[in-house]
Image (cartoon, rainbow, N blue to C red; front, top):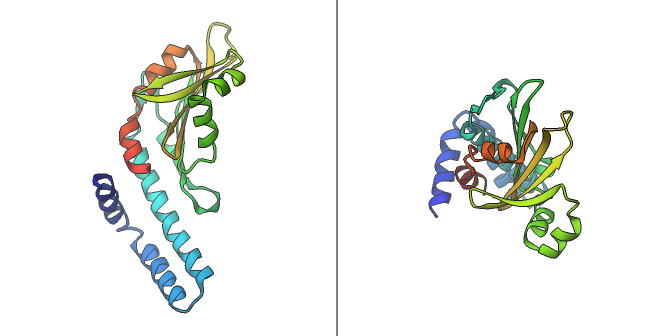
Length: 199
């Protein structure tokens, strides 16, 4: 209930700039429904939901750290886009420059959630798919999948960390690091606050 109230407050204050589009889409949906044009009503509601997903995505970007260790965020490259089919949004922020980079992507209503959760929660499946480069870890209490990918430097690798949050998936990639370094950086991501907004 508390989360719903927070989301309603967030949406109502954030919609001020987009109130015309949201109000127009809701009015179109209501009129189309009253006229028995259910397909048009459905489309207008999808448009309104898409606007809300974009607004929530922009609020999530505000929660992400501006700096991770020595990596500064590339705020000018921040991006929030609606997912295909108007379900959810993709939120993206990058950190660092050429020699060392990090990247966060958050996909709400991710189609990958079922597969990741199966890997994390079914030891037999996790064992079958384990090639020695993948392991299950916990980040801030959330079961996550860490995958090592070979890097240019033999002492440092590239890592990808996948953290499921309900129906959303956070993918965090860091180049030229160790597994302990990516996990330390992941601790700076406010997962609980993000989960409250996107679930």
